[in-house]
Image (cartoon, rainbow, N blue to C red; front, top):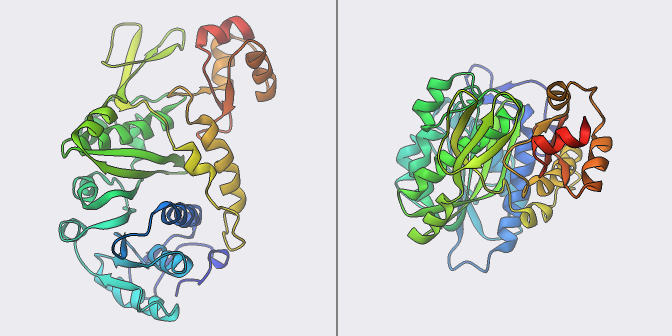
Length: 366
């Protein structure tokens, strides 16, 4: 059965004997972070008029929903619904709930997720599919109560990062590109597609935290209603125009294309996170198995939030300028001395974000 605390998570994928139920210990970072995000979300709420409901929509063994109920039940009155479409998982989930004495806090469903999403409303929904979350988004965004949170995972990074361009166009109605910042542009394409979908229903989604990790993208979104808010949100959707020859890039409301430039998008051009929210997360719990990594990411995410919607790679810049690569600190000192900002980015250990243009880098580093 599942461990009771995240520091006890076992190595290797977990399958209940004789079943196809899957448990992935590599996702401990995401599960720890989800606890921290929902905890802070609860703390920000005024006393709700009714008991809140949280949904773990594609639950597997149910570990995420069980952790929400077990670790946050003293924070507020809420119920957790754990849904899993695989009938082989249901007995295992119920056993795990009983082992953790959470029968009074959790309801188990064995439904098609889209069917469940049309039947009730939730303050928090978490959808973690294998592949794309696009087939669930229309129903999910309408199923979150105003002011609530929607968490989505997508593992189809190859189309979004430009490996399968036609798939990205078909699935997200956007053009990707395979370049030095493809993971950032892929994440922004995902956010942009969801924003355009939400706007159809006069719903706005605000990024609380968007990030790229390993083989997946993860989005925490605050959901509000109103045509005006949806219009304001759409003003943050546009394109990145990239010059092939000199590596210069800039944002534009519409795509541009000629022999020298190509366009990426439509995609989200706004902040990747709510820096105040992220800075307030409690990620230092002793039982968080990923607390060291979480602390590092929570120091990087707020810094990169307000920077331009792309990043540079140290080695790629050096190659373009035909110079030897320099250390991050050396480049940062030069840029800051000349009035520019430069911060690390979580997208790449060799990456950096700056408000300097490629031409500025050429003048200062060459």
